[in-house]
Each structure stands twice: as structure tokens, then as C-alpha cells.
Image 1 (cartoon, rainbow, N blue to C red):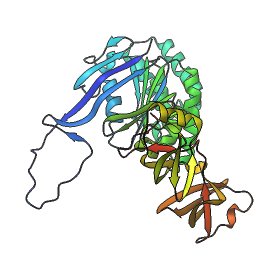
Image 2: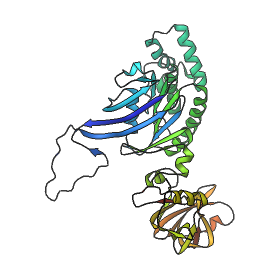
Image 3: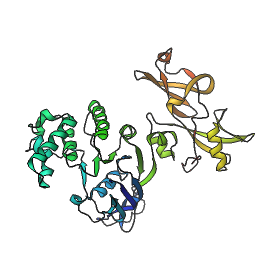
Image 4: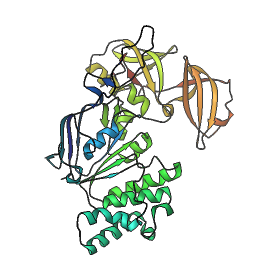
Length: 387
């Protein structure tokens, strides 16, 4: 079993500089990371159970603690407090080589003086595997990754995508319990990233191991992960399947972070009429869907000012809706992204390139509508009112 369990994991980097008190009138630099007497808290109260053979993606903006968490699993960073279990064994103090994990880095980390074959065989030689066993494993991995023809080349003769395949091949030849990947595609161009994403999905079906994958790219997270762990400032914001975090964001941060273009946000009012909840915006009322009615009633939510979130793909143009004016029209191939000024906000609406979608010009007056099943409601603290 290659289950990974993280219990109350915390990582504090000690302060190396003396903390200076700001002089009178001096502006204090703001930071989102918590700073204590012990030092800077990079990861706080991290709890996660990763199931055997599950593909988990840690995602979040730069500095949120996702790579630090991965490095603690690998043993490259000490754990300040909490417990880490791999395959049922406590691993806090185990050396990296004794954890039965393999790691793929962002910068490939290949030995430039070795051939592809030698790079992939190196860890097996250190494990003192037999020569014929090494040869079999290296050639099987190369076949799986489509790099057999490059086995005699050195890394400098390979493209970025080919080097990343070699780095992955070097990791999988060991058949590790857990495969750790730290932004492995971020150095590739957009076309190669798409190709390598597809390769990783295929690879996942072929090899029997647990994946923990770090990225700041939400597209990678949504397409690769069985579950996504969204992080901010060292804290977990939400854990769920790609569909769960897209359809039911726990808070405003998740709502903004997941989805491209970003979710549209409005200042609205939650009202209750005839025992039914509705949102009021721009002089219009939208009755919420039955499932939302039930969740709000179960939580006894009262009338209040809310932040209303609606995704661009869920807004349509109509004859009698919230009034707006077109600022920008972006042709994206299969669709047009309209940037519309409405209710004091820049609202993005995705319109299919059919009919008169291309006829909208800057300054055109339009009306926008949405249904009650696509509304996301957040309170003044940014928490989703339904959950």
C-alpha cells in the first residue's frame, strides 16, 4: 500500500535576520505569511490522506506552501511538527533514500555527462540491481515514454519535452511507492505542456503508484488530479474533485482561483420572499435553484448583503436583463469573450461564435441574464453561504 497521510503538518523557517521595529512614519511591508517568534510559518495545520494509487494535485499561487509540503514528503525539508506516514510507517525522521519515493523536478536535474540510458539506470546501479534487470527496466520505461530512440544521446541533444520524459523515466524505473512531481511542465512551451499533460494521464494508467503533483497552473490541476488541494498562505482552502471545487467553491479565493476566465463577482443582496431565497441585482430578482434553497434553509441563512459569483460561461445575453455596455470584444476562435461594464464591474461573458456574436462593438448596450442554479453566494468573510 502506498497511502500517504499528513497529520497536523507544520513548517516554520527560523528567522535569520533581526526583526527591526519600524521608524516613526515608516511604511511597513505587508506579507501574507504568518510570522511568529519562532520564525516564518510556511505550512500550517496541513491534514490530508492520499489514497493508494491516487493522483493528488497541490495547487495555489507562488509562496502558498505547496512545494514546501512536497519537499517535506520527500524528506528534503524537516517537518517542524506533525506526523507523516508513507505506506503505514511514520517517516518524519527517515532519510529520503529510505522513503521509497521518487521525485521529478522542474529543471529536469539530469546528469549532462551521462547518456539517457545512463541517467535512467543510475539509481538502479546505486541499489546494486543486476545488469540484465537494469537493462530490462530502463528499456521498458523508455518504451512506455516513447524515448527508446534517444537512449544513446546526452541531455544537451534533447528538446525540453524529451528531457522531461527522461526525468520521469529515471523516476519510474525504481517502481517507487510514491511519485512526487514539482511543477514538471512549467519550463515547457504551451504546445509541449499540452502534449506532456496527455502523456502524464496515459502514464498514470500504466504505472501502479501514488502521485503527488505540485503546480500553480489550474488547467493542469483540473485535468490531472483525482482530487485537488487548493492552498493559500500555508493553509488548505479546499480539498475536492475538480468538478467539486469548480461547482462548489468553499470561499471567494477558491472561486477566483479555479476557472478561466475568472468568476464574475457582484455586490448583491440575498432576500427571502414567500419562504424562497432570491438574489437582487441591478433591479432584477433571480430565484435560486431548489438545491440551493434547501442548503440555505438548512443553515438558516438570513437576508444579507452578499458577494454574488457567476462564471462567464453561465451568463447569457438577453432582451430584458441587467443593463451593461460592451468595452472589449475578444475573438477566441470557438467563442467571443465580451468584457461588459455592468453594475460597476468588468463582467466577462463567453458567447459562442455563431449568429451575430461577432457583431458586438465597443460601446454597444446589452442586457445580461443568468439562472438561479449558477449563483454562488459569499458572506462578508468570503465564505460560501451554502457550505
